[in-house]
Length: 551
Image (tube, rainbow, N blue to C red; front, side, top):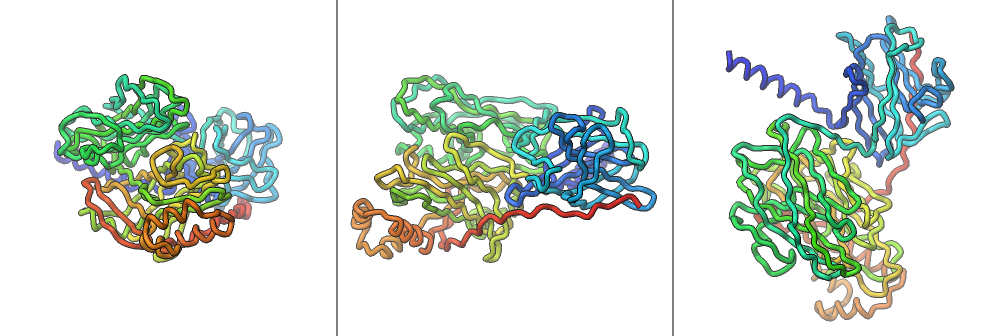
């Protein structure tokens, strides 16, 4: 009997996992009785948002957006399945009467079913608004309204209505799973040096668990908000058995034994939570018990501070379906990459070719991306991440057209994006150096530059970075220099004009790139590749749907 019960539970769990919809990663009940459930996902680049409403009702159902939580001025849809078929209309409310049908139907019905006492309505619309009767969906909390009837005659809903405020585009779930707890990984009364830029690393042991746990939420613990710029947490190899701390970029070889990124936080960001399908594994067969905390101090005023900043990791013994992982992609942070001064818009590129992942990972698989943090420094203005398959761009994974060094956060992608092994990911950064008179070098200092994307994905692999760097030998030859010293002098004394800046940018993009994939044990696969062309972001047309009237 016990065995049969276990099998039934296992089948139930597997069935539940099988229902996971990559396009609808977010879910909330709109009412306390759990009679109305909303699922949604979105693609900001394509300007589309997808909704699925499930009502415990078999009459007409309605959902919409309200300026103040009431009917007046609301943008709504009403649908249902009547005796002669389904009906679905885009409407707007001018008062407390039945909402009027819009002349322009901007919601696209995908499916509408009624069974077992439930109505399920799935539809899509543009994130922006398409006519005067539509409300735009923004990155701010919005008041969502719903109502439903007992029959298919659209009439007053009585008390079968409600309002809930949600931030649809910047949604971060706040789950409270059973058997949960947390622990902190922080600096402890660390005296910050009077340097403008300083990276401090502390290797420490986390609590040990006999059975695997899943971290489901990561939150910052910041004691000096004005100088702590970002944090990174790395998993160390099992060979690391003693705590220590040092300048992150000193000559300590022991720090190189902790390279697998598992968590990040950037200035301006809040805590973040993993999706219900995945969690960051600790304990059990995860042999590593030491982790490295890296804190970047951006100390402009050279202030003397004592700091205890770090991260709070919330974990649960209720395991999710997948282990989550973190992959850093983009332009390798290495000496020899120069951005010219006086540039209005200078582009750099970092290429990740996932075809080489199996060379360093024994058990490799496709990546299901769910969150991202984009990273550049002071002169960064835009960051885009494109996805290519079989030589053709198929998507933008993430785009920030208004990058801000002082506002970096882990953001949900809106939908789970599949990266198949063999796909290429291209990180493009745009810089403005008009106010600089000298070269800007790639590096770790705040005044240096980076071009990276930190990708959160599942199922996890033993993987750390997938980056590229222009072939310096080819670059030196293409620019007519004899050796690195000659090239460095040429770059430092060159008169940078719009023409020379563009020529240099095109050379960097045209030449062969050294592509490196590294796993968490420092095994590296080195290959070559070329930078593909990123498309312009297309303007998304408004949805168009013919109103389906009740038959």
